[in-house]
Length: 402
Image (cartoon, rainbow, N blue to C red):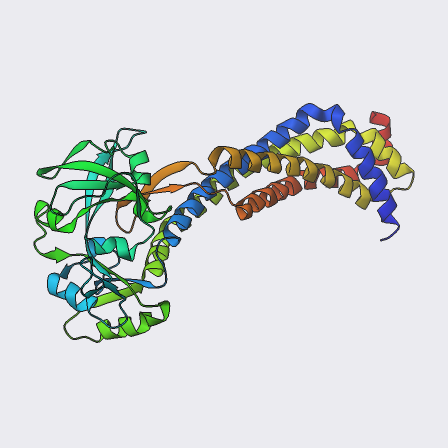
């Protein structure tokens, strides 16, 4: 084995020195592989960005309570008395009221409805979540801050829009008026939650939203800020064993992380299917390139074999060239995907709530590594058959044909 190493180095070095003579065909292989990597990384970055947005929403010391058996807020329903029982459960953080006299539970009873707004990019209607909240919502979600305009006033038909929603859907500009349901609503502000799913939503006063959408005195969920993350089990046990209630209790972080799983898996499967079919084309391009390289160097290869060089160094030299071209193509593709797609703002449908979620594409280091490794796999299979052909080339025939 050790005796092959100098031969491998010598043949590989000779092979790489002649790359410039085959620049055209080499570029075809590199561009093909780069294209595959761009598409693969770009598609996977959609799933990564969507998952980061939902998984990054919420915290372990915040719980969401819905009706038992509900998979999302859309399928939940809670009465007013239910929300009061939930707010008074042990483990809920108590805060001083605005009047400064009494302490009140940090629990927000919320309403969740879907409205239609046109997308800025396409003009087509999209399902946008409109959330009815009270003052407690800002205590439960301390990251929510008004960044333009002002907050809505209780009792008025006023809306504040998440930063992501304002960038994706038409009409969400402070001062603009929207016709929703049977009433007109004025957009008075823009808020930011630091890139969480709340940035995809519109917020208004729950007490105004209830009659506007004929929801009576009902809500769909309660978000409760707990005294600590460790208080979750006590809080959950007290509610699930209470005979007055039939509820589902989850940590907020677990709830949103679970919502991302279905769509993220679908996007990843789709991305790899596309990359597989495109990869077949890239492998064919690499095969043509390496077969051309072997044909152009058949006299050199035959001469080396006549001088005593083994088959393995010849195979390694051809594979090295194929892997080098794939590596360069993969790096170019990964870099292009990062420059073009990383941070790109988009919106997609959350299949759990059937509403739009705004998010940013995330081209992460693991995705870049996956793309480059896939490029190397394509390069290996693109160079394997030409390498074997070069090693099996009859020496006498190759010298005569050359």
